[in-house]
Image (tube, rainbow, N blue to C red; front, side):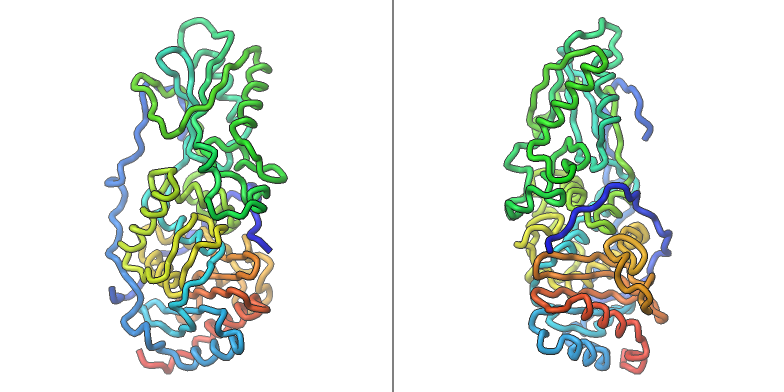
Length: 435
């Protein structure tokens, strides 16, 4: 089963989790304005902590009892599994094929959301903006707000019809440019054609009403947007002359910001991507975090950032921001290291709170109910045909454990994952292990 899309009704709950400490490791309101608004400089954000990586003993798991249990659980299917478990002190408790690159499915979203949170901060919002140009026409620009909908569109139409606050006469015909990405960039190149017709595979555009999805993907977002804008203007007694321009072309110097519609804040966007596994939102966060909507360049910037964090990059391939592209490759050691890194981050609570919770919410809400791990696993799941993955934090009686398990071809992956997590929860297996 391919990775499903997500409902946009969830408004991402913040669990208010405390910052998880780590021991030392080896290596706004919409308003009429008369000038452009500039984003907050990155220098205003808290400094990133120093890079960390996996422990020096990464080739020698330090908990033999847990290692044997995991090997036994994988059994004859050991070759299709990669499983890594680490503790707060940075010890590698268990590891099975942890260096082997796998197709991660939606575990890929852990990279995009970490990157965007670090680069943009927890209060960042995506803005859709209406600009008045010097010749009296307007331009609508956007940053991919996944919740952009008809009420916001109607407000833009009303303001444009009213001249954008200009004291001049009300225009009978509104000339409006829609700034959008070129059609070849709407989907990552590796997305299967069949996926592109589904709601979870909707095109990634800057001006995306309801994330470019209804029951299925909207095949031509600018055409749909133009139609709805014309209707909104006609309902208010106006007419429209619409055109599409490249979103990569800069605004004219004399452009004046008339109005902007902000998205929900970053913690909601993170939850939509990680808790509900919303592909569109994850792709937008990758692009915004990178500061470019050119996907090849955004991927390079993400990989550079990951390398700067001291993470084990051997075998890692970034193809998209959501995990729908089967060219992605991650290792379980890399994902465990990323979780360790983000647990030390100043924004760690927002990152952890964005994840699904076993038996409680998101993609884990129906799993592990009535078990010892219900409510104690905060994780990102991943599902593609033949792929099942989970990476996250298990809260044990001895503190958090950072777990990543990826299967490419397992017969009963959910049962194995549940058994692995249950054994990690049994902290007695490792209490007698040497530090």
